[in-house]
Image (cartoon, rainbow, N blue to C red; front, side, top):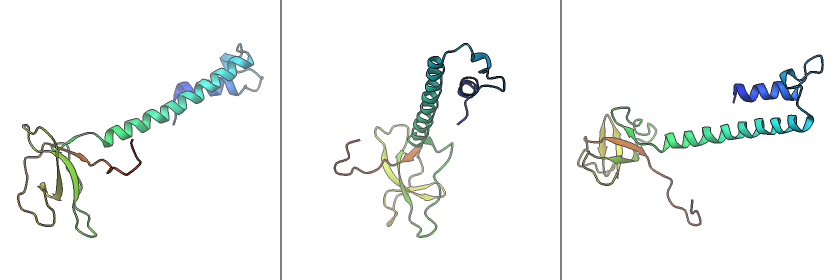
Length: 135
């Protein structure tokens, strides 16, 4: 993680140059330097938290089929993966369908009957509920 502001604080507050001067920050006393370093550390950790939240948000977002489709079924065993989908613009609630590849979606992958082609968007299924896990 590199942030120019954080790097500037660290370079100018923590490490003196060859003359023993802390860059433009030499006027700071030791307590102020320590505070600035702690701020830089905190900002870096917050940057990491924000990155993680962004990644999670990206994984939980609806993906329009016009943007992309999920990957094809597992090549090892041929089993398709289930996704949460919005079927059409009139759908009130999303439903779960299996993606068979080539734009084909079905309710039962082992006995495919009706193929749904009017899918607007899809997303990964959330983790199933586990006893004692209330997050």
